Length: 408
Image (cartoon, rainbow, N blue to C red; front, side, top):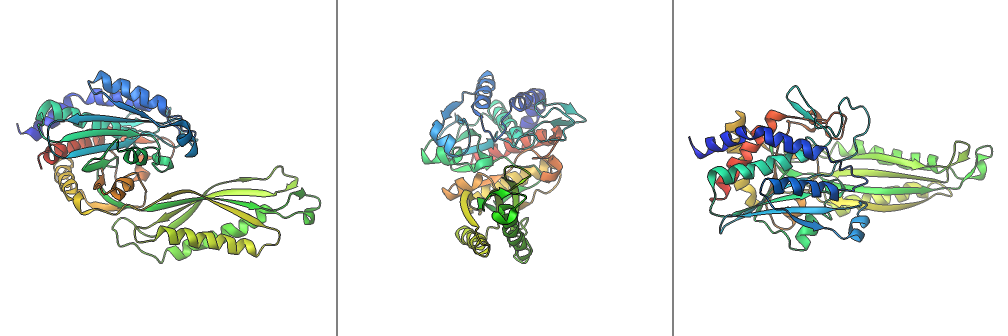
């Protein structure tokens, strides 16, 4: 048997353990918000230790975590040094959006049905805690590398931009890999992604009794005018095309709105939060300035209305670095062998933590366990699930790729 075949065999023989590991990870909630995620890190560290992998724990100071809108964060780093050479980092995030409604399975159950595992973060991206951990275990048991290093990085703030996860660890020089792979799906290797601007807009009017509405200024009606102006931008955005395969055009979404005091009161305040996805070719500062001015100009036409605009997140797009080619080559080669089909290198309209590594000059790609599309995974929807065969095969691809990369 070749080394690759022996890696595959080890993964097959230990796959039941791998699935149980993922089930344990799913059973500890990491809803973000509120973002009380340190307990999951503690449990993960316990499970890793039982497998002979010691995790370094890096709790982020409470004031920094609270400033990002979260409650507790402990980042985990597992360092496996084999000899001199490159350090390859594998990063997955454990934070997830709350389950929401409509589930037919327990969102924290890790239930297996018809070859799929169900639960919040089963596909994005606690599954890749499992993918990466068992790929490294297979590598060490079978290939016994003597050059380079592998680091596992498990973080908990991807949903909020990565500022107290990868960004914090890079800032404090806790990690500085040569190459990195981040959690993704199995049927493509992602080399670029959109940027994201999130803003909170508060529209102020003047409260009044609904029986005498002329005595007030309706913040809801004003917010509708502003929202309509913003939504009209989506028509314009469709005429802007990205040259990156897999990415289409910019778009804007308003995901949250709240305000008012009662049904019989003219609302004096309305707050909404928007998400503006930016293609790699766009200038983030220019995008922000344009939206800012559009909101102010619209409000200026409405007597008695004022607005406050607060930036919540500015995540730059991921652009491929020249040094990422060894990662792409290895994953495409072994992906085709394991999955029996070509694995294209594409961009994605999502945004991820990988941009933070690329901004620091560290080449990275996105690859892990999952289907062809986010829609198939039910990520951020009810009944999130993962095909166990995708988990098994992605683990083989990562183990094989690490074997090649450590010898470069």
